[in-house]
Each structure stands twice: as structure tokens, then as C-alpha cells.
Image 1 (cartoon, rainbow over the protein chains, first blue to last red):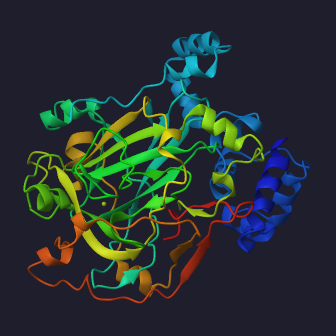
Image 2: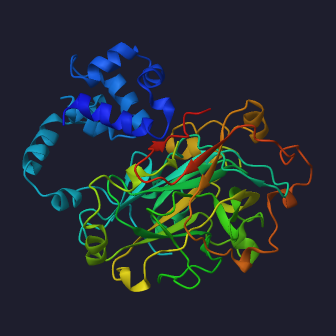
Image 3: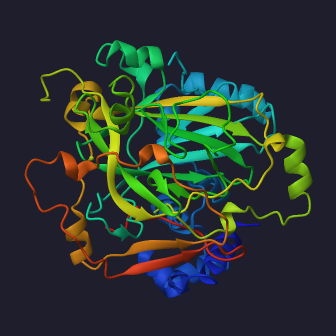
Length: 116
Length: 336
């Protein structure tokens, strides 16, 4: 499924239970023209910029990182993280490229539990 | 394992099942009037910021470092609610929620084992949120922050001690085999995606102040029965987290960041005609706890009436239903 299809499918699913997810009302909440959103949904225009993608993801209850990835983009937040230590994170990402999910999760920082 | 991701606690059991995941967000909200009426569900106004306790060892109490976990800022008499989700999956996770190590669901002292009778937990994909202490069937008393040591917290009223404060959470996953069997023939779209649910604030020079949770006004909310059998749960696997409540007045001193703005008054919100929420499900719900009966609520500790317990009339109540196949998570966070 491409970016536009996912947006359309998610919006229509929401609209079936809540009329405020019409093309016009969704576009108004995002701050874009309905015709622009329509063309994005139909794949006639490329995915919008990061700000609009983030607003769309939030409005439709979708994962922002997944949406950005589907649009061929990386969030400015993640870019900043990589730019702060480019060699380290480039190496890390390459090493983890083929690692299974459970192995990647072992590298994630856990909330420490103590004595209580 | 429990991680902190985008101001949410994310609980995973990757060794049990790759889909075994639950998310808990702590929502800022209005303190509803404590006037004896049962109010509808108030809105969410964004997540409380969460921080690892171990990132600020020199500025937080030593006992917090021993407890581990996370902390978040709350203003005195500020209210909160917890929202539960299953991420992009539908894996049931049992969540025991306590305030000051008093179980908010069954009123019993904290126990490390799962409490089946009376039920002492909620199930992540069956209970969309928890706004307070379960005092009666279909009725809760709102979580309201109070300085630990003031005598206002439920913990202090029940135990006579101001020892723990904060919130304590423990999670257990459903057995992988039970999950696979029950969900084998279900559509790939997740249960939580199909469900209509609402997700939508001492002086600066003084030491950080520990907060506990007392009881505020009444609200209509069911705590749903666990539809699984006790043997369906994998009680050999668990994760737990201590959520400390830091007085917002000490937040900048500890973190270097400004705390969230003070919460809005319920009366201002209602006067503006902004929406409240009502949730309906035909699931069976549990009885309230006798342990909470007779406890003083927030208004009983106020020497002067400041008008914040004056009744209000919510003009707009949005009715939400659990409708498989319809709806989507609606963020309450941006509605004010």
C-alpha cells in the first residue's frame, strides 16, 4: 500500500463512524485544501512535507515515523539525532540492518525498576 | 520490558510474543467538581511529560533512585487519567494500577501477584482508560494530586502513612497460546484500531516535593470484568514501573524545563461549550471497593470554598461506543 492509499483508507474508515473525517473537514483540520488532500490520496501528487504528514498522522491515529517512511522521508528529530553523532549512528544502523526485532529491542533503553 | 517512548510507557513481552505490547499515557485533564454528581468523562489535554528518574539522581529524593522508574510533574490538586492502548496490535495485557501502593481497582494493598478475586487489574485492550479509584460499580472518584504528608492521599487515609505516593504499575501478558487460539481467525486489523476510544499541571528553592493521589469528584466510568480465565494469563512473566509525581513547582529546578501550564478550570471549559465524553460498552463491569467508602475527598480538605466545587452543566457530551469496524482513536489533547 502506498502513502496515498493508506491515508485514504484510514480516513474513510474513520469517516464511517464519524462524519468529521470527510475530505473537506479533515483537510480543514490539517490546514490544506480539500483538492490537495484528494490528489495526495489518489497518488496524483507526491506526499506532502513533514509538517503536513505529522498532522495527518496525528489526526488519523497513525504512526508518524511509519508515515514519514512511507513518504520516503525521515523526521527532522531523527535527522538531528544522527547529525549529532553521524559516525556512531551510521555504524549502529548498518549493524542493525538485518537484526531481528527482538535483538533491536534489547538495545532500547528500559525504564529501570528498583526496590519498592 | 518497559520503555519510555514519546511520553508514553510502552510495555512489551518480546520473549512471550512479538505482538505482546501495551501502551500507557498519562493525560492532563480538568478537575471535575466534587459536588456529589456523577460527571461525564472530561477531556484529555495532552500527555504529562515523563522522565527517567535515573537521569536526575542529584536533584531527586534518594528513595526515588531506589524505586527507579519515571517521574512527571503535577500541580497540587491537578487531575489526571490514564489511557491504555495496544499499539498496533491487539494483545491483551493485564495492568495492575496502584496509587501509593493502594490498588485503584479493588482498594487492596499492593500485591506482587495477579489478583483475580476481587479483580485487581484492567485489561489493556478491554479498558480504554482509568480516571480514578473504583468506588462503586460504574462510578469512580477522580485521581487528584495532593502533597504527600498532607493527609489527603488515599494511601495516607487507608494506611495512616505517607510512605510511597505516586503510581505503581505491574503488567502481565496473556499466554501466547491463548492469544494465538483466540485471535487466529480474526481480521488483521487490530482491535484497538477498530475501537472508538478517547485519547485525545514548596518553592523553587526548596527540595522536590513528593505527591500522592487523593480522591476528587465522581465520574461515570465502568471498570470492565476480565473476560479471560485466570489460567489464560502468563503469570510467570511480568514488568513493573514506579511513576513518581513531582510537584510542578520543583520541575524546572530538577529538569531545567518549564512545567506545563496550569490546568484549566472545569467551569471555564464547560462555559465554553467544549465537549465532554460518555462511553458505552455492553461488557460486564466490576463492583467498587469497600476500602474506598468513607474516605475524605478533595473538597473535604479545603478550608475555604474557592468556587471550584460549584456544580457545572456540561453542555456538550459526545457519546462514544465500542464499535468493532467503526471509529478510530480520537485525540482529546487538542480540543481546548
